[in-house]
Every structure is written in structure tokens, then in C-alpha cells.
Image (cartoon, rainbow, N blue to C red):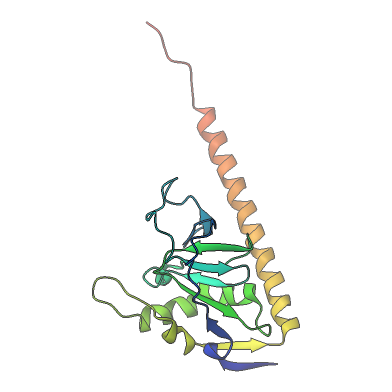
Length: 183
């Protein structure tokens, strides 16, 4: 049995800045890779990282201007990372599995809702307050974990099939590579 809940009852803004300018790894959040380092190469956009937001392990971050294409993820790589001050960061209560929420935020339903409520003149922008109002079906933690396990399995199969397709494509291309004809 699941309850229809308001997402804002299960997530909370986490807005801690790197004021002490600690040496914390800088990450970005992309729509294809999620949290990743060195997305912009070796040079960080700003030398002054005191305004960058800290994202502890287990918290989510998203670019408000890019969430409409799926640039959202939860941080599962290091104890703490920092992201651009433009990002929104939030924590999740223990009754909501992070990977379950991740799949929800990447779902067609959530992406359509994001596109419908995001505002902006040049780029759409989803404020955290807007995300709070999203409805979410919240089954028991056990059921959330079962759903995540199934979706993780599907994701693995898709990845393996993609690798197989790439290998077959490479074999086809290699079959038609010939030595250059010399005069």
C-alpha cells in the first residue's frame, strides 16, 4: 500500500556554503552522468569557491535551469563535494529511499511536471519550493527497495545491450576496413 504524499514533506533544503574554503572536490550534475568530476576540464569556473554549496553524501543536487532535461542526482561518491552556488541542494528523510526518489525525478511523469511548472524567460527554472509541491506515491520502505532493485536490474540490462550493440557496430565497421590500395 502506498500513500500519495507531497514531496516537500520528505525533502528539505540543505544550504551550507564552503565559507572556510575547504579543499573539497568540485562536482557538476549532468543529465547523462549525474554527479561527475572534471566536467568542465581541469579549470573550475571560479577560483573563489567560498560560495559553492556543500553536498554531503546522501543529499541531492540539481541545476534549476537544467532539471527539465534530467540534471539531478544524489551524491553517493564522497563524504562531501561542492557544487556551483546556482544549484539547489536538499536532504531526504529516512522514510524515502534516495534511489527511489532518483528514479521518480527522472521519470516521464516528473519531467513533464517540471516542464509544466518551471518558469523563466530565457531558460526554464525550477525553484525548490516548486519541487516541494510535487505529488509522489510513497509505498513502504520495503516496497521502495523492491522497486529500486527491479529498476536497477532493467538499467543494467539496458547498459549491457548498449555495450553489445557498440561491439557489433565496431565489428561491422572493422569488417570493411581495408588496406589502402597503392599505385
